[in-house]
Length: 138
Image (cartoon, rainbow, N blue to C red):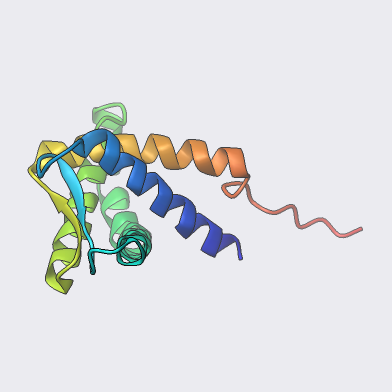
């Protein structure tokens, strides 16, 4: 259940990110929905959030592990670039499917990744979905 809530929170954070970074028009970051109705837009956000979770859970872990020396060397700032790359991969994968996230350029992706991580961190913290469960036995 917590995973479903986290996907919905990330979809909401992705929607807010497209509003903040994308603005109006086709510049920055925007969502290309499956259909032009509200349900198509909502379904697209949820699917992109699931793709983002899969990419971050698999490829993101490998890239972050390999780049540990760069994290130390840049005092963690390389994380912004890596998150932008992960978002660009999500945009590429969703573009292959014919819907989803669209990025105008790499630096728009880095800015969107920064805003997305801040928003999803805040929302997960407010809802308590980022905390590990306490597994004490009574």
